[in-house]
Length: 136
Ligand code: AMP
Ligand code: ZN
Image (cartoon, rainbow, N blue to C red; front, side, top):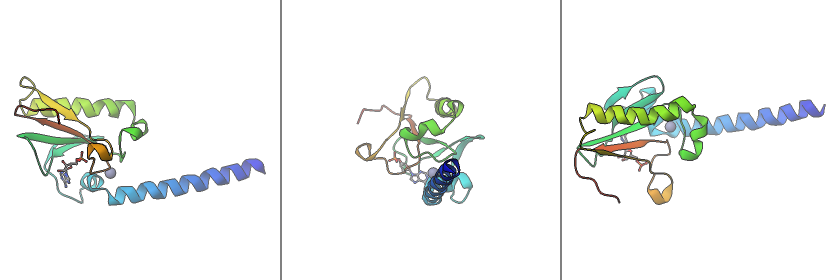
């Protein structure tokens, strides 16, 4: 009986958590881009990772690299497989190569949380280059 009760509690908790997760995905602009419901200028598309131009590019190259699975920030990176977590950086490098900025250099930046100015709560790497960059 105790065991059945425990299962019920776990199931309820998971149900509530899934619902919260789905809500955040519905509201999430980047999930909408992944789903094809919102247009973006895609520069690289593969099974688990997507790269598209930042709508408000602040350098000649300003691309966002995201996991297709909704993860809000670095604190959620454990929800991604090790392969995908690594792949985000490999795609950032591929994007830089595509834009011919590997030699000149580029920045990969994650704004995480309020103080960093994170506006979209879907983990993303800013890949920025094509001009001399400073540290903010
Ligand atoms: P952050 O402040 O790190 O959360 O960065 C969010 C970035 O997403 C900003 O640089 C925005 O310009 C960019 N952005 C917001 N909406 C879109 C969109 N629909 N397509 C492409 N980039 C976007
Ligand atoms: Zn999302």
